Structure formats: structure tokens, C-alpha cells
Image 1 (tube, helix red, strand yellow):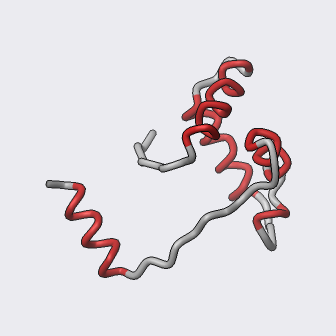
Image 2: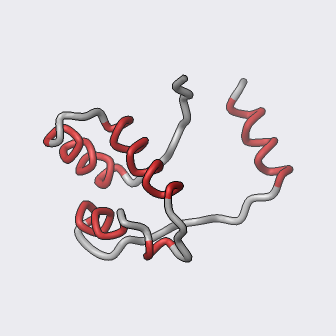
Length: 85
């Protein structure tokens, strides 16, 4: 059973990823699913240990930059409810 999610990426990375997926004759959704399945199937200590880190670096044409932001439960709830309006 498929489930839909919404993700935000840098536009240039998305464009390059779309081209890569097209060259592999798969959709960007299936490429993303494949990458996630690889991530959760192994035991990795850090993001750099992931087997896809080299591919991410290649697509980004430089070092992969992992952007995270601290989020608390209240902010997540507020963001979710705002998106439903």
C-alpha cells in the first residue's frame, strides 16, 4: 500500500534528481522510495555512512549538506493545522 508524503528539497537538487531518475527509467517517487529502503535496511552510525551519500554528493555537485532544524511538538502541531486550512 502506497502512502503519500510531502518533502521539501533545494530546487536544483530536485531537477538533477529528476533527470537521474529519468535516465534510470523510474519515477522520482520510486527513486526516493528506493533510497529510503536502502537507508532503513542497514545499520548506519551517521549520514555519511549511508550507501547513498556518494550519490547525493554527485547529484549536488559538491559535499552533501544535511539541513536540520529543531522542532518541538507544539510547532509541528501548529504547522500541521495551518496546512489543513
